[in-house]
Image (cartoon, rainbow, N blue to C red):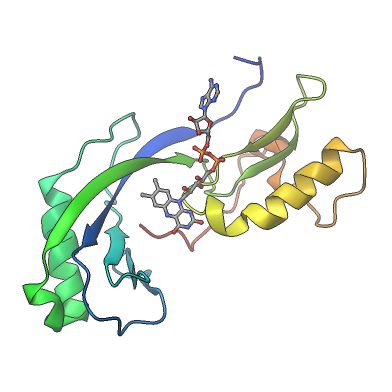
Length: 169
Ligand SMILES: Cc1cc2nc3c(=O)[nH]c(=O)nc-3n(C[C@H](O)[C@H](O)[C@H](O)COP(=O)(O)OP(=O)(O)OC[C@H]3O[C@@H](n4cnc5c(N)ncnc54)[C@H](O)[C@@H]3O)c2cc1C
């Protein structure tokens, strides 16, 4: 809409929540091998997701049976005592995904005073404090407190990009 080109594509990722039970799980558990992640909320619900390596890009936010079965089976491999726990809701969202699964930050070369802050590829919450700080500095014409050279959109002109390996879900 603004006249700037980005190579991002939307990719569905599914997630679910169980009924609550007594809290016992402090850390968030992630397995890069299985693509699963889960944690227990303050209220005791388990919240988690698992990535589908065959998911095609597109605007699809429907829940799937594949997710229900794969997530349940994998979760029980990790924690068998969850076998009696009921899943109460599942839903899907879109990862705004770049070719290297890294965000795009910095000025858009084609449009004056437009700044890219997109393409978080499924890990936008955790990096948002630093992203906001750096973006505010750029807009104010200050030196960014983190080097963003390798996150600029121009990196996609050079197709020798390095893909982020730590994306889960
Ligand atoms: C299932 C799932 C699990 C995730 N888990 C994690 C996690 O554990 N940790 C983590 O760090 N990240 C996670 N993420 C990623 C995180 O949600 C995103 O990276 C983050 O929300 C991106 O923030 P954003 O502000 O760039 O975009 P968004 O949060 O998508 O915000 C964009 C906003 O712009 C609005 N908008 C769109 N078009 C227009 C328009 N034309 N005019 C006005 N407004 C418009 C939209 O309505 C929306 O409110 C997950 C994502 C999904 C889908």
